[in-house]
Amino acid sequence: MLFSPQSGRGIPQFQHPKINPMPHYPYQVIDWSTVPFTQHQGETGLAVWHTLQLEGLRIRRVDYSAGYLADHWCRKGHIVHCLEGELETQMENGEIFHLKTGMTYVVSDELSSHRSHTKEGARLLIIDGAFLGI
Image 1 (spheres, rainbow, N blue to C red):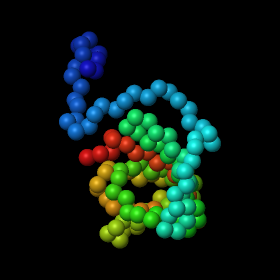
Image 2 (tube, rainbow, N blue to C red):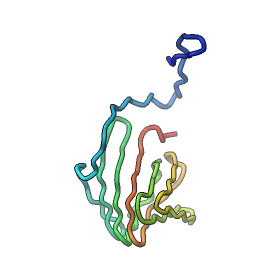
Image 3 (cartoon, rainbow, N blue to C red):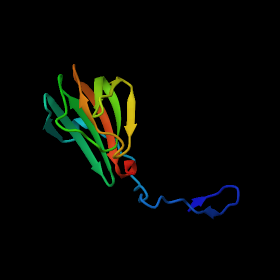
């Protein structure tokens, strides 16, 4: 229930039938230099993921090397923010989108088939989780 200041009573909170309510996360600071990393070979180049996994939420700082091209088409939802460099997102239908430093894209699960490519490398903040499902 949410509190209504007008009536002083609780009001029902809408729950989407397919989505569980988001867990509550305590305040925390993430020092990415202390988060363990994994390396993922692309078709060309390398991706280095620093991953923080929380209940229903994955937060990653990802570094793509120069010349990186993903080795797969992805259909998962993401919020992707470009921290440094430039990212080219290729869609399976041939469309190409460019993300420069300070730009963000958002897509829900199953709404596109996309893969990442960088010419000079890029550093991204990527957030995904159950809230992006349809």
